[in-house]
Image (cartoon, rainbow, N blue to C red; front, side, top):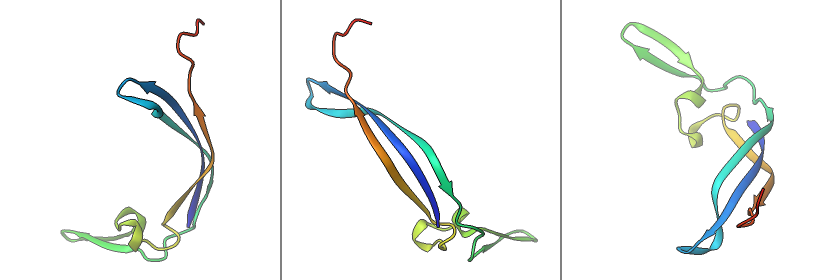
Length: 89
């Protein structure tokens, strides 16, 4: 199982249509990646006379991927920034 650790920064704003603060820009920074290792259930694909095997993570939906190909994302920090309106810079 590959584990990806990320930090999330959300820029928030308010508008007349939705007065509650809501994100308009979300940025994720990858902090760490722990590789799950080689695929344990490679998939055989064919194209004409050519036969090859590829990792199941490149072919199968996540629920059918082996433990090495499946990706888990951990959000280490989530920061919400709401810039003040009318601030001169």
